[in-house]
Length: 106
Image 1 (spheres, rainbow, N blue to C red):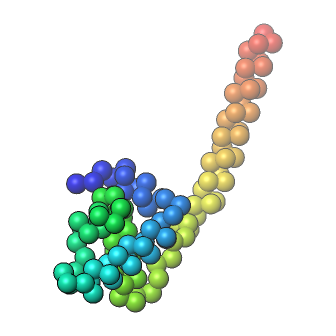
Image 2: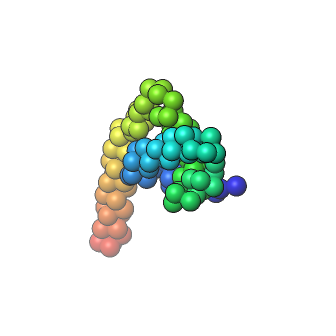
């Protein structure tokens, strides 16, 4: 079994869309070949890691069957959440600096 941290890293990879497209291409190639199907070992031979196979196989199958493309976008609220985290960190840093100055002046 592939470690969840490796699967999360594969899902967050910047080249995820390209690797998914390549996996779909490999699946189509092996489906039309003498084997009649693409296996885990075929994908490993093509250079995909076990984590990539776990993370991208469903999206690649969707591409092979012509289902609507999966949107690889940032989840709703992610940017707003990250902005709030930046504000909170700046506030904490400012408070720490103020407390340090107050403690140094005494």
